[in-house]
Length: 276
Image 1 (cartoon, rainbow, N blue to C red):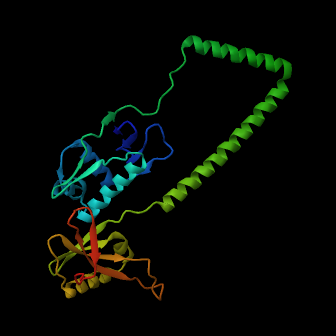
Image 2 (cartoon, rainbow, N blue to C red; image 1 turned 60 degrees about the horizontal axis):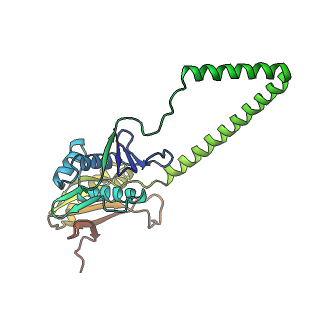
Image 3 (cartoon, rainbow, N blue to C red; image 1 turned 30 degrees about the horizontal axis):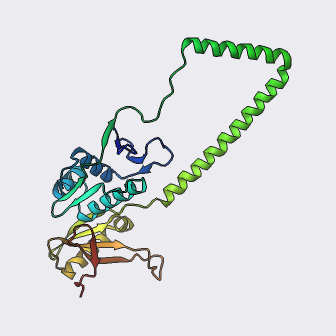
């Protein structure tokens, strides 16, 4: 299903893409949780959706772990994409102490047909006229300069093939560069509880640990630290590539405590000891 937002942005839920209407060259790929969030907001346009409902419909029902951090990342990404596509006004509104909603002034249209304009087929009279004209032209060219015509056709075909080849190579290179430079969304996996905190680990850090014993050691260490968290805080374990270790065989993990700011729009992380 495709949706047209404010007659300028095309949202294709089947392909998980956002882009400008009439332009197929600059489609922006979004993740499945981000797609499900946008579909939920569209279905309840102008209504405030509770965070608990969003967690269930976007993450929990699909076997994924929900968190305020993941939700805020999805909302932030959607806002940034829509702003880059020309929607300056605030499309996704934060409802304090409740959740989010799609602004009621956003115009949403369902589009069941392809957005691209398809040229109508020529009538039978036009087809016959074109065919007769081509046949007459072919006979005249063949009788007057058959060899020259064949050479020109061959030359044109070679040029077209070369142009097509280089276009495909350039397109492939551009696609490869886009995929390589595309930022990866950070998802967090629930590991267990330590002290009064819920322990989450980033997928990047979890994927880098191939030995299951190391995962147990990490959780045992978190339990020994006995962190103390408020209701809106949790312990986050990440792997950072910013600071290199002295040995390439070592992996460096960081334990942080994260919590939601009072405005409900951002999270802040610090050491396990509270900031002064």
